[in-house]
Image 1 (spheres, rainbow, N blue to C red):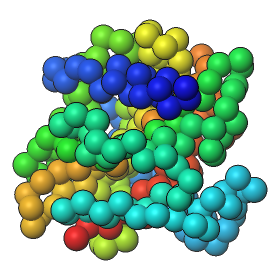
Image 2: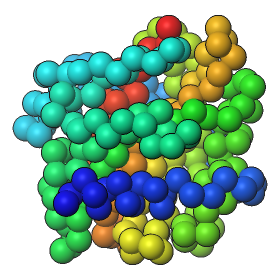
Image 3: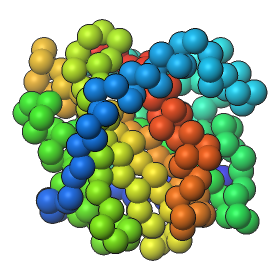
Image 4: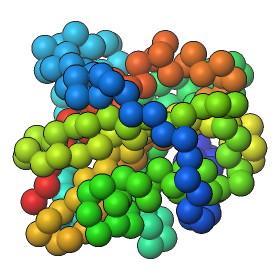
Length: 222
């Protein structure tokens, strides 16, 4: 039942791709923030008891990209033409319930539009606000961070958050935007966490940026 709920939420999540230009804030600390988190992960600062699942990983390999997730996360396979693969980590990393509502955790490999890394980033940002099911905080700006994956390629981490009207859950989303020069193809490794907290304090209190970066640190390009 848990996975059916997650799958339904995912389908609603991915509807709508009309391009609308959002407000975007490029953090002045962008070049340093996420690399600091990556280094912290390597030194074990964030090795919480729940993080023991990262000791046993399984790999997903596509034509141009490879990444790893804990082996107990559920592989849902492809979801239409946009989602090449999805993993459900609901009730496997964070608690199942928060504020009497479920926490839904998903990791997706998306076939991202764009003929270059920068174009893929811009199109992803435009897509954020195309879905009428999403309600953004007043004056909220999405954030862009520079990032470098294990194999040395430049990438971007995008962060946004909003309320989903259909599920009445708040959602935090992190996208790692990468581009294969060999294939001339863009991808997004997307982390989605849905929860009930209109203040969005759940993000900071549960280290969602660290959680996303741990996943992104496993990504390599072929």
